[in-house]
Amino acid sequence: MGENTMTFWTSEDNVAGKKGTALYVILPTIGCYRYRMGEACYMCSYPAEAPKTPWTQRDLIEYFKKALKKIEGKKGPISVRIFTSGSFFDDGEVKPTTRKEIFSLLAEIEDVKEIVVETRSELVRFETVKELVDLVEGKHFEVAIGLETANDDIADVGINKGNTFEEFITASKVIKEAGAYVKTYLLLKPAFLNERDGIEDIKESIKKAAPYTDTFSINVTNIQRGTVYERLWERKEYRPPWLWSVFEVIKWAKRNFPEKRILSDPVGAGSKRGPHNCGECDKRVARAIREFSNTQDLKQLEKIEHECIKEWEYIIMEGLLDWQLQMW
Image 1: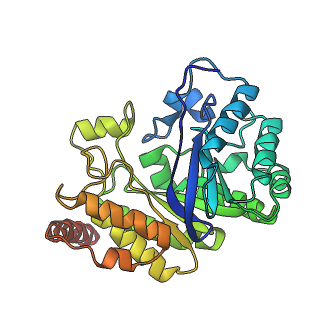
Image 2: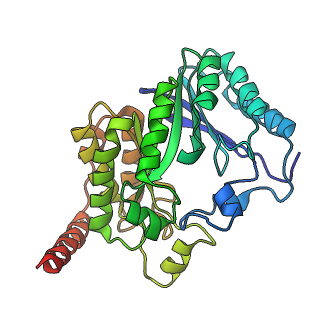
């Protein structure tokens, strides 16, 4: 196989609405095609970690089989979440025959109740989704799309996303017509937005994307190496979001869209490069966010308090005053 170390792990997670085990598998493909064209999203370094020597499709399948050993003997519902540092539906990364063989393996495992793959909007095709739906009939098959924001200007200027909200709508409709579910990734606090505007952008994005979405994943910005965001952060022109902002977003989202599954895993929480509060409460707050994701129970958030929330509230209010002055 290639030179990559094995990258798969399990954790307690929300599985198709119930508490269970998730197996995360990062397939070492050649990575996102836009990155290879020199058009990477500004916050993302994942494709840079793709192996220098491409793996064969057979190697990818054997690697996936090894990953499945991690769930042997696990009790309760299991979710298998497949990442590629690009798009699962990109034939340049994962060939159609490889996709079908992977899904045939999953179809045989009774306790696997949920399967999630990632893709960019423009790569979604009805036939591609439908053949996988048919292979795992009866399982919750979810296609995750990195929308990031429903605001095309923010997607262009602050993320360099390379596609539009209309393309997301088209892809989501195709996925649902093919019989699968849609997970929508949204980015909390893209570059060039202050804390308040970052919160308002993601709330507005949830409103717009809700008719096309079954699950929202609130992806909280962290500073990855070699990215535009890292350069902004090093110049003190960007701060990762406060964890209190994550609280605000997921509480608002669950109260306004109780039928939707709202997930968030604040990667790097408590570090300077990750979402953080004051440093004292970060672990407790991040743990509460993850526990909410597992249970969808807002009580997990309501019992967490710390005095630094006053500083966060001041920053949010300052952002509101700035906005009012601009309007005036």
